[in-house]
Length: 361
Image (tube, rainbow, N blue to C red; front, side, top):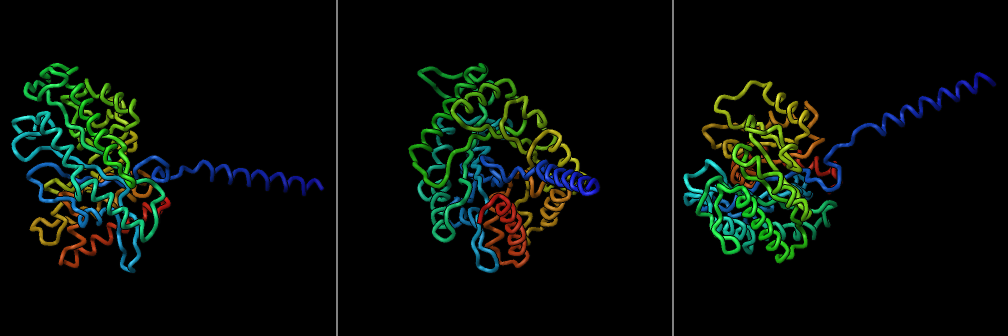
């Protein structure tokens, strides 16, 4: 009888230990409610852009039809962003000699709400996909660019009857608050049913010229129920200080794809470890040089991102942002080169697998 009691105690101990280990195992962040698991960067707004983000282009980012003909949800977040207007003015420091004014800020925001393009096109695409596979489990979310009020600009324009002067921090902050209010109002009036506005993206990829105003801008966003997003480049001023700068969500750019001379294979490991240490998410990067026709063909680097992210525990755990050049998902899918189509299918399969982990079809 004593032996049986001892065996029962031991069995109970190991059972509780197994339950404890299972319950303490961290579930992937991409399974959490409220996060954007896969956010695609959609550059749009400048006159220099060729992509219109019409329904055909947007659809390749909203859903993926696999080789068997089954339809799946793709990206669950859509970041619309722009650095310059294509006419000599920029929405952040350094990109052009002149800074965008209030009229350019407003024009940028308005462009995202054009009929049949950008936000409206995504709304329609989601409607079409829902007819075939039902609504997504997680709402599809949008993040919009917030221009940087470039220090010392004098010609931005008027607010409440007064000319703003960006040598004054309060004026810079007030310009941002005006833009946030304007964008929220436009989004509400659009009455979208399939997409929601999740927050705003700080377009400056370094903290150099704006670290003293970010706290108040972020606080204002959060007071309205929105998040503050940032994607600094590797080694930029402040790239590891996102929490101190009061951003809510930050992704680290590795920039591995862009170096003329491919970095040492340890570069991506270093970036992954840095992001993990700082509590940041990661960006995947590729552009037109991943197309087979490019004389500087770099598709191998996209593979290396995914291999490294899987090796170091990021690929099926944390949210990712995707820099896709101008319109690369669509370009790969519609290319006449088999290599491009294969790359598209391989890439889309990974995004879909991440969405399946999230509970999507």
